[in-house]
Length: 294
Image (cartoon, rainbow, N blue to C red; front, top):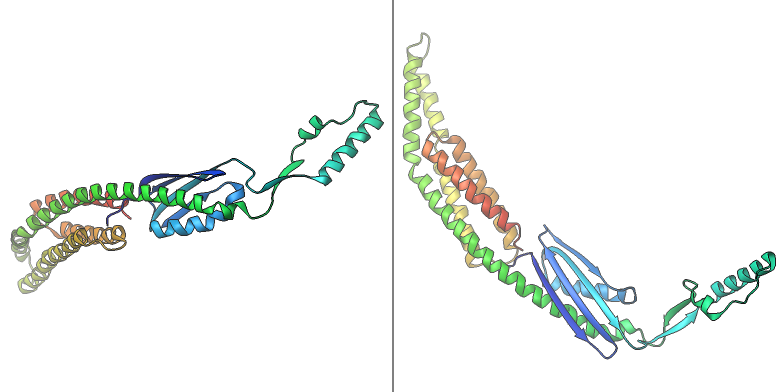
């Protein structure tokens, strides 16, 4: 299946004492780059969440955010930081005695002291008890994300297929000009040979031998054959994508560009050069699009 690396998914599940909302966003990346964010009390969920995401996403930058709304005790109790309380009361007493300040410390004063009161788990770990709710929200978000990525991937596949078909047409036109390209190159060499042969001390046999070697080097038949082979491989991936289709087509795009570039450099035909430029432009469209395919 063709999957885009760009997408968004959201999942929400509710329990008796908790509500979990999960949002997942993905963008293109060479590898799987996973970032998860959970509230502090539920950090133990992160390894499980990462495992679920790895099963659903093969490549791309993934940002997954878990939001938890709690109501009820959730197995938590309020505890006083005794050491901080003693220090606070001792300092308050010292200030009153040294500076002659009246008044007593009230409960309101204590409630204003940062970190004096803290919650501690009581009984079973709430993160463990409530994991099924979070897991459901994660899977819902990833399911929505998968549908969005599949829809975008299918649209991109159609766009890429159109470009690939245009490349095949251009490659066929380039091949049709190979003989004419060689004839034009030969005509230019004959003109040069005639001019050089008129110069004193030039061996005409050696000149013809060198010309034959150079003409062979300017033949683009092999480049056309390899170009056709690469385009056939691309077409096969459209029909049977398999795994890592984005990386595989990206590799083929590099090979196609190499053959086009070589053909353009070797060509002596203006028509071939123009077709190569057009093909490179079409290939660049594929290169840009394929960066977002998983």
